[in-house]
Length: 281
Image (tube, rainbow, N blue to C red; front, side):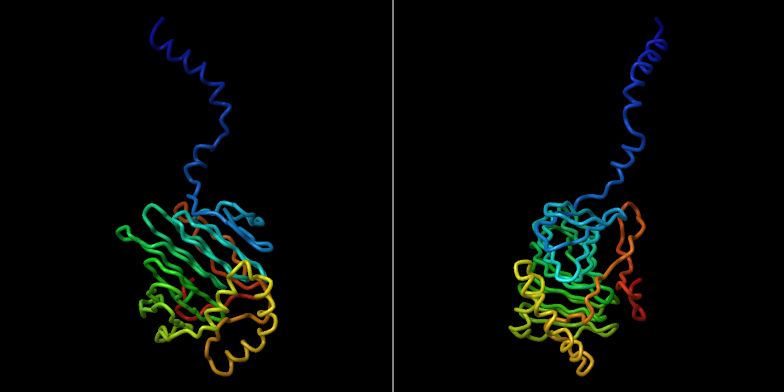
């Protein structure tokens, strides 16, 4: 028998097994986004947006690059990233895990709206970074514990441990040290870091701590109108900025870019989310 005949027989013998493999499986596997970590705790209902599909998240649910975590009124979520960093996400928050490469220590998060407390591991790799971006600012850390919020067009930062480089999107920066806070209002430069009152540290901790979700919810309901009026009257950011209307921030599913889903423009249910001149789309 010729070598050509042997080859043809081998191909015919393998054909039934090839037909058993669903079409596109290998392509889908190649395009699957990497994992960034998992949800380790949540209350009461948190939505996870993955590959344009929204599902109620569960404890131990995997979180992938490009996934969005959307918490509603009084909801909280804790995310353990693969490098050991921990994110405590407060209520009425929309956050995108844009990128998390634990081996290279490259982390990029998008806080579209709401509040988060991040406990980042120490960065030791060359060119490593841990950044949280809002529509008006960005915080870059080396390894620290800090709180960040974006509400009412204001990015607010409070550092519990370590130091944070706090910048506008066009590069105007301040260094915020342990126990200090700073704000970026709209397109303005960051305010000079100042010592954060102990009461503020306690309240922002309560606003992202899952164990205190019920108690914290009472604070939101009781003081919402007072905090909003303080904003209008004095233009000073209070310890915890709370929205009066308990609407849930939502974001349309973004289209894939190079295999990684980028953060979408976030909106508030019941109305469009206004952008400030110069703000990122």
